Length: 116
Image 1 (cartoon, rainbow, N blue to C red):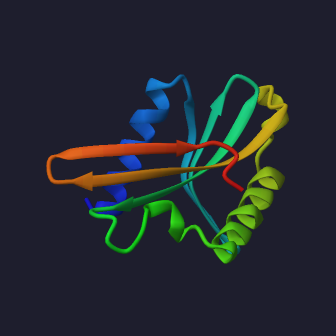
Image 2: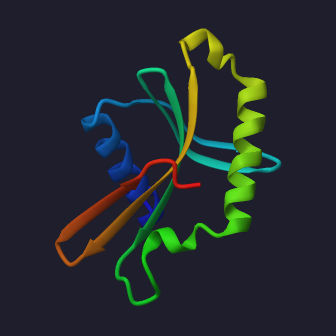
Image 3: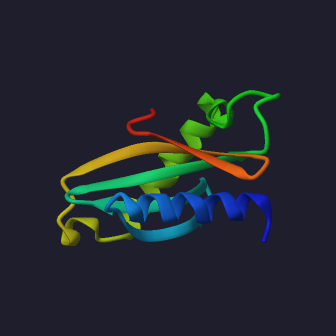
């Protein structure tokens, strides 16, 4: 398992602990990729996961650039055209970022709702 995959596993575990249901992982299309699609209550969240082993090059979330945000939005729009989300009681959509920082033996997770 790669470090990025490990970070996504940590993010999924975190979301589940906080009442989310994982709808899909690693959805790919020609316009981009969605790391995690999760649902809580009536909100469908498109979650970008960024993992790092240190903050020497910045916080993980800083890697979600304007271009990356554009690609995520495009992939989310494609996802919504392909999936019947209205059948699952979705009233709200949200773009979140989960940062996973692994420092030595400790793991830190920061969840930013409505990140962009």
